[in-house]
Amino acid sequence: MKVAVVGATGLVGTKMLQVLEERNFPVSELIPVASEKSVGKEVIFKGKPYKVVSMQDAIAAKPQLALFSAGGSTSLEWAPKFAEAGITVVDNSSAWRMDPTKPLVVPEVNADVLTPNDKIIANPNCSTIQMVVALNPLHKKYKINRVVVSTYQSVTGTGKKAVDQLMGERDQSVAGKNGDYGMAYKYQIDLNVIPQIDVFLDNGYTKEEMKMVNETKKIMRDDSIRLTSTTVRIPVIGGHSEAVNIEFENDFDLNDVKQLLAEAPGVVLQDEPSQQLYPMPLWAHEKDEVFVGRIRRDESQPKALNLWCVSDNLRKGAATNAVQIAEYLSEKGYLG
Ligand code: 2RA
Image (tube, rainbow, N blue to C red; front, side, top):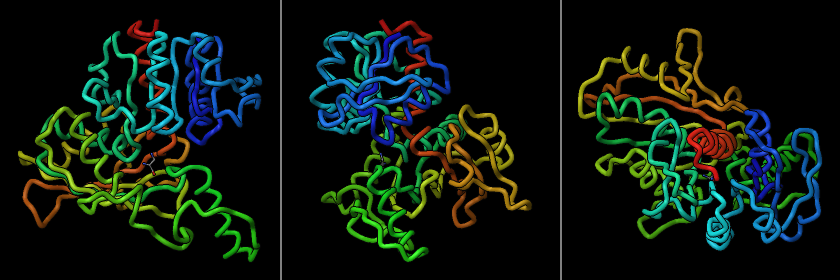
């Protein structure tokens, strides 16, 4: 099938091309799309060069599927134009996520909401995706009442400029080099931790924190789950980590919790404290799964536990999740 990747030269777009290729998605023709300044550049897919085209040219080429990773305003303007031309859009921006007419999908959790009529499908925020993959099997069995989550997020979630800032600062502090790099953040990120992801809202939370609250309820189809979040940027590139405290309606068996997670789709249990085995971004990097460990009872609160989960935010948190949605649509025969 003809597949367009919009934002094909960015960090997530590049990862989308890699994941489409690795998972052998049936791409007969690739249509890479990017901003006007990148039109004419080449991207490599399955060893072949493809020229980057404009939005108009991509629509005229009539792909069946378009994976978008081009920012909210581009998506608001262009996704409907693709959809009107009969092209199914899977969009990685926040533009459509909370629109009640658009599905917000993590395939392991709620692929069944998709119908052949969905032409714009939202890919959730990276920090939400990895958390709900771990929460869903536990919610189904023990019913979650409340979640308290703190994140430790990779600079790759911000984009290439942030990776350049971190590496530039590191070069300076380690090698004494005076490289030329721009500031993606207001503050130094190397040797630092920044307790702000995205902008602040009137309630004192950041947008990233409220995405975790609102998107979780929509994906898990349960508005009764109470959730509070603190999202933090750390000088890491391999993936996002999350410390999650979960309070259930019903008491649970800890071994059963571990068993449920070990068997859950998309989860790898990595929980051997005696071997000092637990999830880390260093190991999750370039993997598609959500790694879960440090599972233990919360001794301060009945029916509650703590866990630690890590996932590559550019893969399961973005590109892989989008491609998995496309695979589901393709298997169901929903893609034109
Ligand atoms: C971040 N959640 O890590 C964002 C990316 N979508 O900044």
